Amino acid sequence: MSEKLLSIIIPIYNEDRIVAASLPAIFKLDIPKEVIIINDGSTDDTQPILQALAAKYDFRLINQATNQGKGAAIKRGLEEIKGDYFIICDADLEYEPNDIIYLFSEILKIDNDRLAIYGSRFLNRPTLSFHYLVNFFLTKLTNILFRSRLTDMETCFKLIPATALKKIKLSGQRFEIEPEITAKLLKADYQIREFSIKYHRRGYHEGKKIKARDGLLAIKTLLKERLIK
Image (cartoon, rainbow, N blue to C red; front, side, top):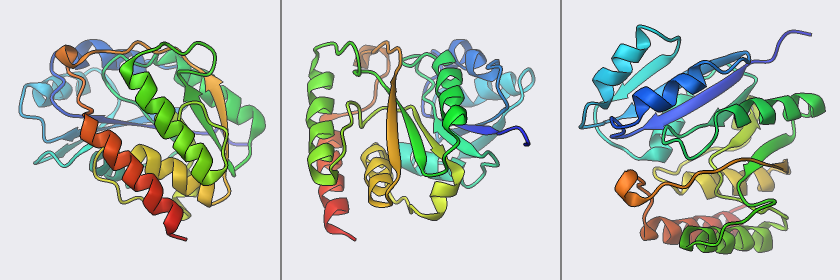
């Protein structure tokens, strides 16, 4: 059997304070992988920093001329993947890169092309915060609408077979792409299995970008997906 390849998609917008420190840990992951970075129209020094990193590490860099949103950047990256599986990874150090190895090893043990693996931040040790409560509500709504039993629908670490892209067509432009991915996987009868991961939440003063309106858009997306067959 040939070795399975994982495509790691990293959307980035205005992260010049952290990318030089955060990205090398992803580049150094000891698994068969390709890394695709989408610089989503950054207006700070993110692009020259990424170009400097490209001289040292093996990854593909796609520069979008204008900021189009996380969803648009992810979709652009998905157009380029060659892996058997893909995962989305933010560049903000909230998630532990080594957990990608853990999740990848778990999906390879099962080897089911109708299965997605989610890294749950709240499976074992939920930390009470405003963002947790919002995520709890959105996850509960997902479970009610699609008869699932998830603990962390909004997790960034969704490890998905590349073949799923033939069955789910993504349209989200911003953060609503997270509930859209989950809803469309469940509608297409994919099984989603969760494994606990580490999480280090950063604040808005550190560059966090998700806003209250994104929560409202997530609700709208879930309801829309439930109504559309």
